[in-house]
Image: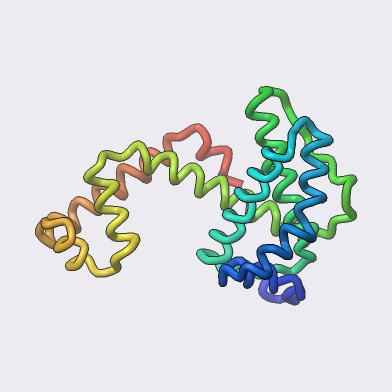
Amino acid sequence: MSEKKIHVDQKYIDGLLQNNSFIIQAIYDKFAPKVINYIKKNGGDSDKAQDVIQETLVTIYNQASQKKLQLTCPFDAYFFLLCKRKWLNELKKNTHNEVTINDEVLSIDDDAIELSFETSLFGEKQTLFNEMFQKLGTACKDLLKATFKIKSMEEVANSLNVSYAYARKKKSLCIGKLTQLVQESPKFNQLKY
């Protein structure tokens, strides 16, 4: 994707990253009504639509901050596809029926489809990681949370009142357990696209 030109709508991604209230309001004003209408026409209501929009913005923010998301298509198409996928996945979960994505609402270019797929996959991986993280014991969760915030293992050990050697060994064991939980999850194989 590095050869592709960054779209002018990258300003929406950058605005989300900077928590720019003007840009965030612009996203809601310009792009949310289409999503709300779509969800209302497809078995949802305004509250559900707002949830989908909020979750989608969080996923975009997380991918942009962790993976340096570069938008190569209009934000409108990208955002709509993400919201639509999220809504259809909700419907599928709640009705246990197969749901297909029919992209007749917009003329969507390949970049929008590719980017929305990558972001959806990123969001699903984050969700799986968070679900499995919650299954860890308290000691593992506390240690790993500390290592996410503090980069120095010496500082992590001091903050938890344990020895440096114990903190390193425990971190290794906790990461191993988390990896095992993720890989044993039935969702894991579905995410190996």
